[in-house]
Length: 305
Ligand code: MN
Image (cartoon, rainbow, N blue to C red):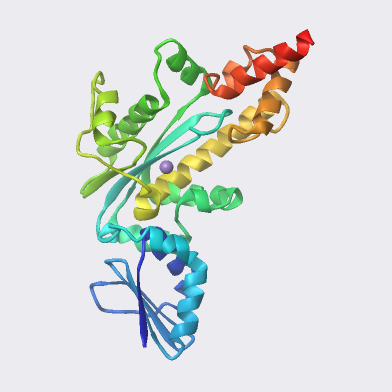
């Protein structure tokens, strides 16, 4: 009896970081990872196919399904193969859904011979890693691999959106293009450049059309973080730089700023307008988000009544 499953890079990483203490050597060139656990052999091929064989197949397979949250596993069962056979430049951004704090875009280069190590360290989509693990993991990754990062602060963001009418996707496109442009001279022998897909290819290049340097050999991939370890690595470093900058802003404001763009953010906006000024928000927030307009209206209404 054996079980087979097609994995994403992120899922393979999840399994490898969990079972690597049971890993056994293998000589097969098609094999990424093999472990012997509870008298059962767990093999992950470089095509990201998983096979579970041995005495306790059912039990070990169930354990793996629990680890992976199987509903998701079935959904994301799409063209992830070969991702571990390539040396990939991956890019991702953080902060675009947060009223407070900067936008951070990172490009990370993961050569294929480092993929397994990063998986063992627990590299996967940063959205499924908590902040304290990010703080611990990112500095190791930043030593281990070549990367480049751009942090766009709130003053610059507000200037570009107000004075130049840039929208969020245009800003993302510029930052992704520029981190790749900055990273490429530091690396050699890459197979592909993968941008975590936030728009389609035509629009992406349309946003860049007035730029002097445009990197054209890129692919935009939705859910890139779960398909490519390099995109996941970029997302972890970006999240780390975002958290570090966010902490500084909280210190400057004098209280812990909330993340996201929900009701807690609305309250923080009011507090800052009352304690500082509306203009102060330009330093710490993305003032074209709907939160601000909404709170100003509410505040007027309260003042009149
Ligand atoms: Mn992303």
